Length: 180
Image (cartoon, rainbow, N blue to C red):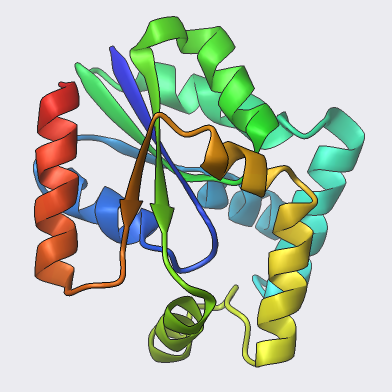
């Protein structure tokens, strides 16, 4: 089994890439779903503040690879030659996946400017998205504290997502087909 992990900042295009590939019958495991599930199990609403708080608490209690650790059993349950991980947010998570899957783990960083990402957030209005520029920057800072910059820098592949959705999908498909 090959495991491809998308690394990137909020609204860079990780989920868009994962959904596009899922349409090609590739199973996707979303790390954010793990945090959202934990948030619900604690009886909390799925707000940006609560989800961020739970993500921080999991990492503080169990290490910066805690969410990766919780995600690995979900990945192993997939009966597929390739599985996509959506939402890697730090170097320790990448390290944990590399330890588990060895050379069969590939990380792809998806990069977009702050302006582009903030505009996407304003359009999609997800419950865990920043409602203001101030919240956006606060989330950036929190995710940086998890080692996101280093995970992006050390990714096996990098894709810039500033163009059309059509161009982005074509680049993702070409890259993943080359990895399969």
